[in-house]
Image (tube, rainbow, N blue to C red; front, side, top):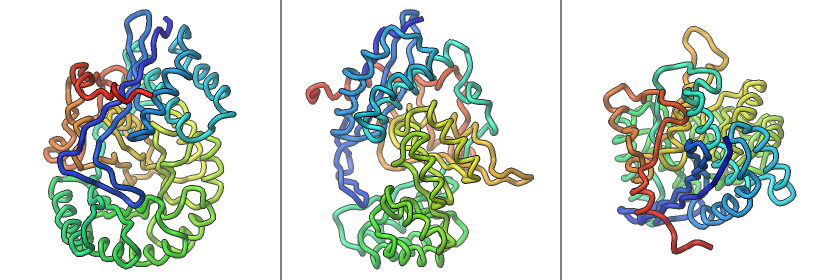
Length: 393
């Protein structure tokens, strides 16, 4: 079997509810970047690259003009050999960031092909599922160009909706400023009640000192974790916060490969690790990062962002996560789910995942997928309708 083509599908549409934001930017379009790997035996694999907007367009160029010429003609089952060939030739130009995001999508597609050839779902290919259903937490409560008072009222209402929809927990954004952010967290805690798990995502908008101020308020609110409180480069800041707060410190979505994760974990700044499989190097590298996290006794809660391909991939990965440290009543990992409008998650597939319906009907859980490979197939008419062709670089 040989790889005959590697193609990117960059998709985009205007958000129906206008603008959404987080601490770094506002955006008005939803985007996704899927990778399709074809073979001479008719088996096709699908993957996804992390990165929105213009990042997706740059990554498409890397996939199609840099990575594809290296791998066309190779055996798709030689996943590790393919990965290292690409990484070794790209490491002079980008050991992190967009080159790794591009490689991630290709690697995921190769795993999809391998599962289809073996007749096994991804979770079986990586060691077997630990659970038949996966718990889900819902995040929303995005920033908008509105007053703090309007944010407070909206966040409280949105948090209640997420809780009442059946999710196991909820996550909110912050980034308006210290006092306003504390008000937002207090409103969400009031909205969901004292016993519902609440997570706060700063998208690295604080210095360590400011994050400590907010984190102390989160301690009083019994927050479950404080995500990306400081810049991903600030390993000392992560450790500073972990040593001073009782709220768990989470991060890692902006870290890449086993080499970056080795240094991040050595800094002892994480209570929870959040690897992003569509960015750090794909499934091949995710498994190495997972082993590092387990060796350092740091629990994993995967970061999930993107289309149904990313969501399906992560259902398999979360299903296969071993409880850490284990016991009669272990703490279970959750699947992250963006509750804002996302047609690329809800309408992309020939057979939709129906995450929200499953959460509502099955006590906040979704079924583990059991078809070979990742177990999903995009609708080609849908891909054609949302394709960003006119913006090809």
